[in-house]
Amino acid sequence: MNRSIRRAAGIPIVLAVLVSLLSPMPGYSQTSGMERRQNRRQNRDDARATRQAGRHAARDAKQECKDAGGNRIACRQQKREMKQDARGAARDLKWGTAGQPNE
Image (tube, rainbow, N blue to C red; front, side, top):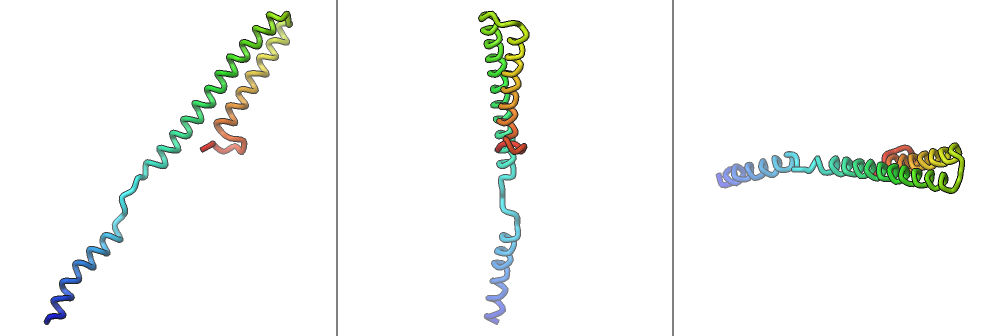
């Protein structure tokens, strides 16, 4: 009789341990997604800043070229090349050189 009482008392404890092991652990499922979104947002912001800086630099270079007496076509081509370089640098910032988004 003593054994049956001990067994009956031990069953709830075993069940409680099994339930706690089988139940899902509380997690933070949004953390990694939030970090990835923030990284992408930062990449976009950096790429935009790079393009914007390239536009300003190209505009200033064109004005200097015109002030130095360069012809209009050559100055325009110089500005175009500078803007294309800035776009390429921004693309590399945003997407990386392997074509995969930077993290």
